[in-house]
Structures are given as structure tokens and as C-alpha cells.
Image (tube, rainbow, N blue to C red):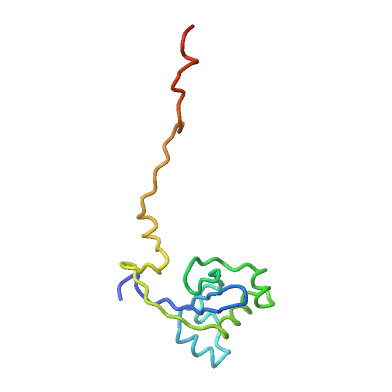
Amino acid sequence: MTRGEGTQTKVHYKGKNDDFLVFIDDSEAYKKWKNDKSIPLAHFISRFTIFLTHKQGTQGTFDTASKSTLDAEFDTENVDEAITKILTGGTIQTSEVSSAGSSDHDPPTTEQVTDNHVPQQTSGRQGATNDSMSSMRTH
């Protein structure tokens, strides 16, 4: 496996009002945790962040879930408790990630975003100029 390639594992939880995602670093440790809750979450999760997909399943834009959203869905604002509920009730999904060739469904990588042409802002006034030059005419 070359640099930038690998697998991406996430747990998807379909809630009452939204879809939630938690990214997993070690899927084997996660599978062991499902049977043995004494394994710390930090052994297979490096970023304790819950993402929303706005009812787009595992696709779409990932936004960080607010505490009020967590409270409405999981009856707690505690991120660790909400992650535990997502990991317990969600479904695991693994996908191959490649930096060289990504499908249309993959979110853009930093390289793809920076390679896009961004028009440069020009300094000075834009728009119509005073074509009549009425203030510059002599009487």
C-alpha cells in the first residue's frame, strides 16, 4: 500500500432526525469492543467527533454535530456517551481510499481542491466606467 492509500472505516447510525457517523481507526479493536466494553474507545478512535450527513446516509457533506443535536437524538450532550450509542446501534462500513483516483462519491481531497482553478481577484474598480466622461468635458 502506497502513501495516501488505505481503508476508511466508519460507523453509520440512522437516527430519528438525522444520520450520524463516527470514524474508526482500528476496525478489529472495534469488533473486540462490541463484545468487551472494558476496551477503551481511544484504542480504536483517534478523533472523538460525531458527524452529521443531513439524511444523506454515509455520503454527502459531513458537519460536526452540535450539543443540542446530540441532546435531541441521544438524550445527552456528552460526546463520549453519544459515540458509545452510535457504536452500539450503528452499522460498520469500510471503504478503500486512494489519493490517486477517487470515485465521484468520494469527498474531495486537499489535493483535488487546491488543483481547481480559482479566479484571481483583480485590484481596482470593476463594472461599468463613466463612458460619457461628462465631468471631464469643458464647457
